[in-house]
Length: 355
Image 1 (cartoon, rainbow, N blue to C red):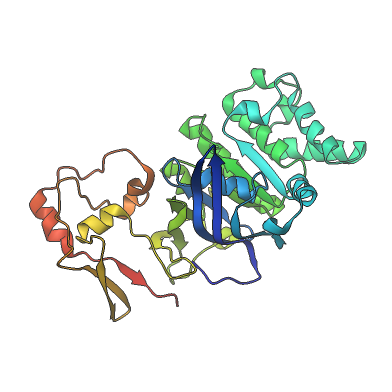
Image 2 (image 1 turned 30 degrees about the vertical axis):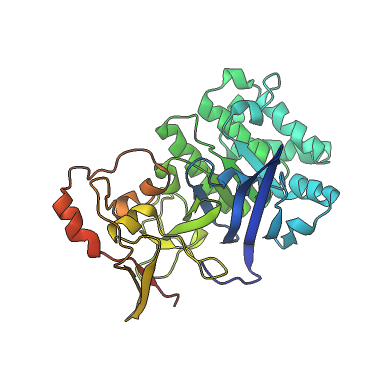
């Protein structure tokens, strides 16, 4: 994680969210830290219950964290009054949900759905018509403007939903599985549209997804586990610098041609989470030895607390960086022998120092 500065569009530190149900307390966020630059396109991944949707709701002003600091576009959301938080949602945030029923009213046409949101934002008739026409053109749905949602395909409905999300001219666009109900070719079109709209309107985009293919097409992947940021996968240029937003080169289709590198995230107290499969490969139990070595830090197991390698232990590799964090699919190297796995147990995790 990069150091905090005033230029970060999103800045969260020590974010805590506790839900109370009857006499029970559920801690959804446990000191989560996150920073993002203006114009970034982020993917939040992690197992169910890890805190992804809770974080998304906090960023959108739909839910107030219990403790910590959360700033979006210079506004500290924890210090806003309820009225100020409502104004923030109406003027700064756009939402795209997985379920079409949450995005569009079925008895209104595509144009009427967008117009309704603009009227609620207080736009005049002339400005509303101009903005509706521009958004319909931006999402490629001008010829379907008078169709109702039931007359549109799933991909077309999501395009209109994105136009609705931009009706209030937001600075941050939030998506909860925005491609979850469409096939992969349609999902690629939607992702391409989101990248185009980001460049066109200067949006910062944060989306929750369970699809690694979707995550791989964003600037940065934030893996959340147990209510904390666990790892980040970033796009790295050939010179080693991290590419963000418009800085990322592409192949003409909007997909960055960069090296992906997954990094362990340290929180503000210097703590880190090491995924269970990596700990198992290194035989690290509850305690570990930490040594400074040339170019980084070496973490090795304490011999009196080392764990045994089992047949279920696997080294997923760079091509399956998210699999061990939130996927239930078996790793591709199940046939690797126990002997090979034992030989790989000394592949210790090296943490790079920030330059």
